[in-house]
Image (tube, rainbow, N blue to C red; front, side, top):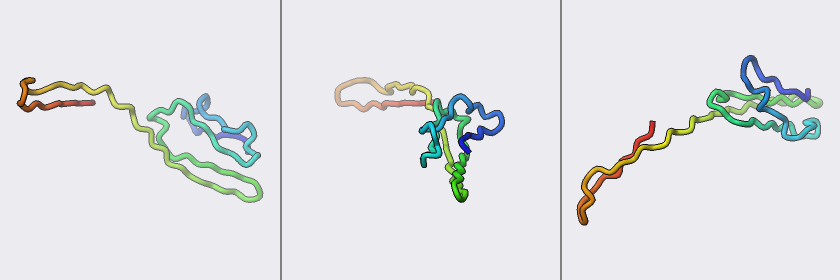
Amino acid sequence: DHHVDYGSGSGLQDRVAFVQKDPSQYDASIRLADLQVSDTGTYQCRVKKNTVAVHEVIVTVQEKPAPPQCWIEGELIWGSSILLRCFSR
């Protein structure tokens, strides 16, 4: 039907668009810009020509990890052992 149903309160209106200007030319792909963790969910594509075809895609957006904190445990002495530790929230 040449439109995207954004759902209620999804915040997708400014970030979703058809890849091709005219989806009736056999490409109804959409582009979702500026992914956010809240975009995780099930997306459905309904294409209607003579019949209706429906396909669902599950999208999982993972949060970018925080920069790691790294440090050395042990003395830097030739021939001794040290531990290199890193931690990220």
